Length: 355
Image: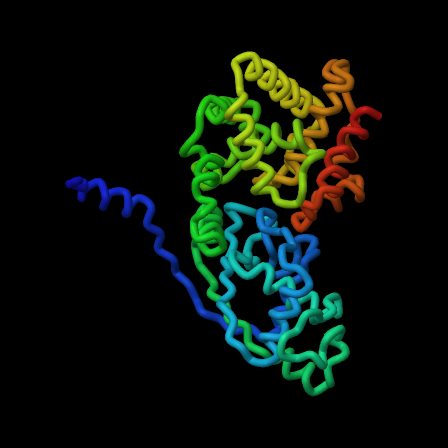
């Protein structure tokens, strides 16, 4: 019979144990819609983070959820977290949705007449209707419907993502997530870790201690290579895209390829260092580098260097990276991860650098 090391069990539990301070809140539909905006340009009080921006529910699923609200069925709590400025200065004091992004987005879409009800089971009289088609009295009652939230306090992004994985998938994605965070993996993972320790890379990508401790820079290096080699095949889900790339690369990675990829990465860093005065930051005083800006700038630069290696020897005007409104709109914190927009961001940088 197997014996268990009780001391080790306690040690592991205490190491990973998280104490969550939380408040239970009730928002009316009307208040929730006022506070949330899927395109907030960094200003809305309630926002959906980049890593769960996919609009997953179809029209029928959204319609059945609205039907549940209309007939008074209880719905699960929406989990949110108060964001600390030490992690994201632009998001300080705002509320990040941890679990409930589909429900929140659906309420907003219906309330703003951007959802037509379809496939209803209990309210066939509303088939094909929008919010504005409801009787005025019913609109007022719908707006007063209570949505319950659990607001977590003092929880870092690692904790928030762990909760998302457990709440949404029951842990089925944990193995692949552990690989992404670096607790598993072979030669390719070791290669990513090594590049993440590059001093110039660390200088160009300022991060909080929390992000560094969970190997966020390794994640950035992974994203760089995944988009560089495969961005044209990206299809909406960042998680699946990165996991699939990591799995495939781990099987085929070789020493010769490590030299090739390291050269591409180092040349890209040198180019950014000499031509982008703020590095990957949007301004000199920025304490963080957004993933969207890093991916677009790094991959776009690498593609430009691949097409014209002579760029390494030139001084390039990059004022557009800080002043061009089209580019700045692409870099917004709410920017979509749809395939066309990912492609547009990367190729915008590439084309600007190539002239």
